[in-house]
Image (cartoon, rainbow, N blue to C red; front, top):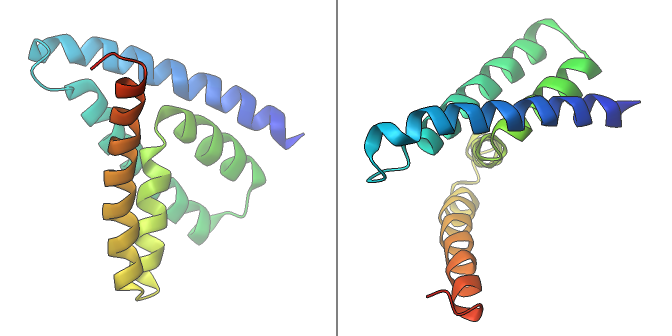
Length: 122
């Protein structure tokens, strides 16, 4: 049953991401991915607010699967990146937090670039 919550939530989140990014990106004339920037920041904020609300007030599989994993996971995966980094800092694993946050960013960008080079696009 949980898979349906995730499926529907991801569909909604992905559509919202596309709509918001498509609306905001043209405002910067391609100089800066403003839509993606807003989506990632907004998604992380909403993820943290939902998670904090869920931890304090509710223990709901619907909230976790539909809202967090589905809607906000489909809206942005950046929120999960932030949560993992936060948990490392919260658990006072500062070295691992730095390695994770910087390493993920660098390796993700390098992987992205390498795929373009391999495919001859760069």
